[in-house]
Image (cartoon, rainbow, N blue to C red; front, side, top):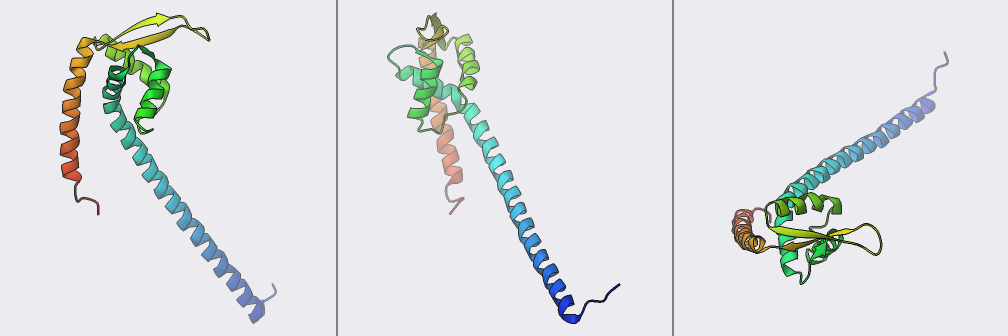
Amino acid sequence: MRRLSTPDRLRNDYRHIHYSQVMDRVLVDLAAEADMSEAEASLKKFQKELSTGTVSLALLAVLARAREPLYGYLIAKRLERIGEGALSGKQSALYPVLRNLEAAGLLESHMEPSVAGPPRRYYRITAQGRQALGQWVAAWRATRDSVDSVLEGAIE
């Protein structure tokens, strides 16, 4: 086996050191990316949990503001527009909530034929739904104010 001369050994050592430095940077970048992915996943989970608790309230509010009954797609678009995108999500996720609100007597619905596509189910808030909305809004505001008090000064 041939022994490397001193300059060759130094070059190989440099390549090894350079390779190690590059790999260290790659590993640091991957770790940072993993931390970011973990942080992003945690944020998404928190947003989903937060959204789950507020969708019914927001749907009742959208339907209370409407002058006429609305179908799912229009409700989703109004929710997205009025909520400035913060409450937008999968449109399909709204339908189970709408059905639950209807089953609780807070909404009523009826089907109408559509010129383009299948019949549409239109929703309208009931008197009981308006009463519940008033109570839920009061509960929401109390909760929001309480959380705001706890959060004040937590992050500078």
